[in-house]
Length: 229
Length: 229
Image (cartoon, rainbow over all chains, first blue to last red; front, side, top):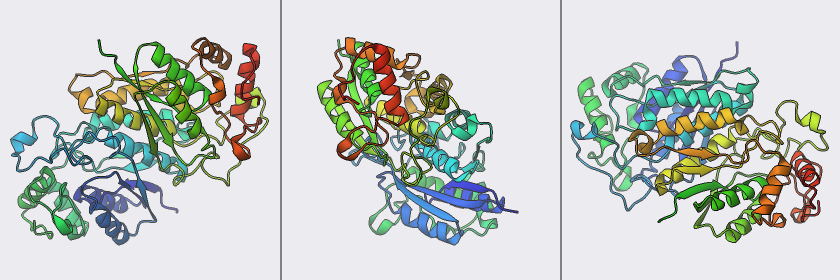
């Protein structure tokens, strides 16, 4: 029997890599979608390529999305600083300047366009609503609203041939649970990249929310991060 | 008092130009957003620039969106033919190959990103559910679902400071009503471009759905199309 196709959003980070491995474990044929959006941490993209190769994706589509021209985020506008050394309590309060306006809406719409074109009704996205930075577009109510929208927005949805599902296997996992699940699937986390604001040569800064959440995850999982950050 | 800002999707076509003029008439400061998506009718973009200039928009943002890399439409894939000489009855049946997967979802997400960054809570889009080609993402239920999504997707929506509205002034108008309303607002329709599959030098083919709907609109409005198609 032919494997069903899934479009998986792959940034090259820890979460999306785990998500890709999970989609493979569930028996999908993988179509990896990586979006460049003028982010500071463009080094992610090298990681995304390695990850896609290792996981034997059927196709890896890399697209440029002009979010930097729109701005409004520390990740796309160098004049806005990436916050450093925030405590878990600080991270729990409000939405930080690394929020990119409408990013996951834009990402999921492009994933939707590709899924419809491929004839896939499964999209995977590694959003997480537990150990995360408080982004509104990582919450379950956002994902469900997008799913409803997708069915109304598309030819296949309207023709009733199709019931798009957005899979969010990491949604309610802690970072350490994600890491443990990923290690069981054989993920080599040394291939991935998480830092928002990398040092020269792409080394992680160790101080942004993303680095801190990653470090906490490895610590709580009782494992060593192969990136050694 | 400062005018409220509105993001207006402007393709350079008849509908979006009318929509822009309506947003201006309603007292908004205009932020025009034009999206290039590898469409056959790239000549639209010249029209969009002229239109934006004539309407004195505060800012005109032109962005490239990689929908052609995704394909799946006669407008972005030269191997798929644009249907010609279809009767109104044929147009009323199903969704034609000029449908671009998830296009309006992608367009509205980028408009949303810009609106949030600008601090605007008003987006205008010239969709029309009457004299149209049967696209799922031109229907009122799609627009309402996007509005709901937008409030969940954004920082401003979640913080409750903001209630994004998607204005669709043309939604229930016939093409001739749109043209009459536009002429009252002083629109010079000779600046606009509607054809999906232009001839050399950008002249309209006169035979695609878009040309036929435009011609029917001018005929029913009892006016002459200045494009002379």
